[in-house]
Image 1: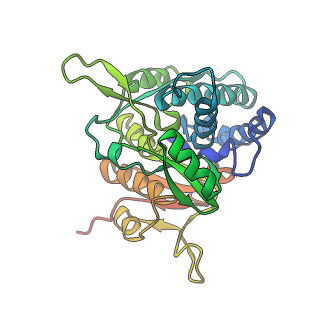
Image 2: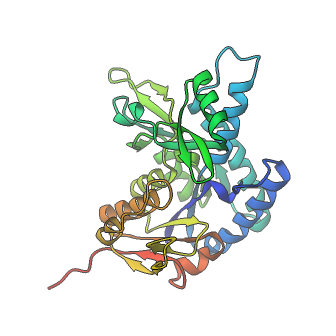
Length: 307
């Protein structure tokens, strides 16, 4: 079975963790342990988030007095793909000795006219007090919005339209490699209408929507979205909260899950199942093996045909 695994960005640097190399290494070792059992039995592609990492790099770049202007987000995204990819490769070599493993800097096509560029919605970087956030917004031209614990920067999040390296990833899978790619949704690029030349875009793409598109393009059997909760929950955070163990794409969309948390995950799962007839699931990192074998998580399946 071909499985696309989408890891949350907090799998490598959880909220509240100091951004130290030792902390990242400990977290990535946990990831490698969680996915190794699946990789022994199946073809596996790992994608991952990069929100904490790209936010940190963007903050450092904006504050660097040597630079005449901050490094653009597409190049910062490429840096995070290399950083996280290297950590994952090293950890997986230890847990899967003898296995071919490749980390690939991946580019994701977006539309230059995507309306998301005019309406930034993606939260990146650290949480700031209101006065600090407003000062940064004035000085650096940032969009900001209130977060659960304070204020954060907003950037554009255009819809992924295609993965430039899909054929390369397919070839690597055919050779028996475990592939790490499309980190942070991939490096956002637009293509020139006349020449096809690629140009970086000042954006961050939702990693779960990219994972769903990649799974579709690779004809995967299963999309596994791993996060920090064991299930999707209806009425999350209320006295009526209850786990959703089994759902169809339509049922997930009727759940009204918020854009800032579970919404993109449920939409990615729904898109993959609708477009391919495959299965998707959402659940906790440490239960990855159990989720694929139907013993944990929220399973997303096609509508049952009648007659």
